[in-house]
Image (cartoon, rainbow, N blue to C red; front, side, top):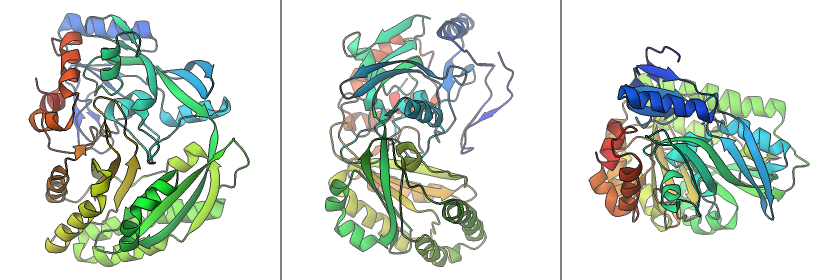
Length: 438
């Protein structure tokens, strides 16, 4: 056990003062920690990188870090790649490098790679690409420690209901110990990034999003400017033509982090300056094309702290949603210096996935951490709810179990599994009480 006074998540939106903070390094250690918490009557939450903006990992009982449970346990070749079993605490950045050394890769990734695989899967982390699903849909089997201290091994063939619930389980069912992921042969991405206009991008979005493997764009509020990213998959691990050292330093460090941070600080002191600053920012990065390992292209470094809300909406509603946000910003006094991020995903069958059963567009809104976000987020949330939007489980929102149930066809199936494996709510906390009920 490690003594800890206060835990904070990355965004500093949540804090916890657990009575115990444990760092098990084996499955047996994890069983002992959970069993000990049960004897004391503690609630239990596992935590990875703390990259969720919500209180999904908060507890005043026993907090478990899975950082010592890291690495690849086994790999079983398949006709399309391999089934790779990993410890739940393995960080995505580390996992990607380990897989690459084996000639493998995760089929898709989000734009942040510091999370643990367990945390990313359990909150619905996703990337972009109309033919690709989120990480949870790549899970083929898992083991988890339940409230009674037992180790449950589940898959589509063995306890399928627990498997379906646990591959995006919100930490509500137990503590993940290992996951078996469907991985693909290592591949490169040819990335083309370029400024464009919002009007043209929305007009062509249907053909563009389906015409490239991975498409996303960033809209700079109060302007018609966007930054587009088109990533095309290339078979095999080599050759690569990465961004040059100087170009990378200028674009990714100086402009995307340094200058962007300065703009946020200026905008905090003088909000009226935000629209012209956004116009500059939307044109600051010139077009570039490069080829690199898939995971190096998917993820980027972000050091400017922010608050975020993200909603999954039916893909066909995206243009109207963006225009509604634009109208609200034009008619309000709110000034937003962070771009709106838009991504896409294929339908999946994961019970609690935001892309369950439908082609999905993801719209993420952000606000600098030193500025007020609530009015903006509340307005956007109403726009999203009007098109049956589903909030990202790890990002800020105000939804409750009563209004989430109608948008998730398997919501009650998930709750039935929870009632079976955690009837005493050892793994509950205030956030889960709100989104799942008590």
